[in-house]
Length: 184
Picture (tube, rainbow, N blue to C red):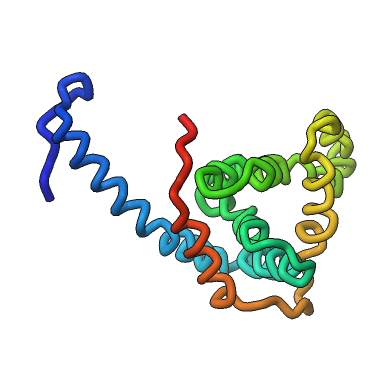
């Protein structure tokens, strides 16, 4: 593999940056495969009655059965992918992964779903379950409430007939094949 000539960015040449950008493009082209591997890694022990992968599959299957668009289905599938790479801030990690490829609405929903899920459990820890209401004036507030109520919080059922991961793989590949938007 060719290497850049610099050891500090302010000494780079256009040729160096071309090499970096080519490498980045190659890395981006393999992104969907890495995401699929991360999903598969979620198929293990869990304190829930199902694996974390099964939870994601249930959430996405509910989105499919509600006739959501493909991008929203993939967001439903990947909403908890952050559990693999950043469990302390899983919503933010999942949202950052998806942001270059999805709408502002879907990004916002994934980014905030962790807070909105608090509606179902925070009261058990002397926290305000209505903490999400600090965002009630946001145009995507209700969409996030609905995402959590209809798909996320109900998707821990060992008897639910979820679609298999293979059903979703072409969708993942199409979403991550999009030209990524740059958010610096």
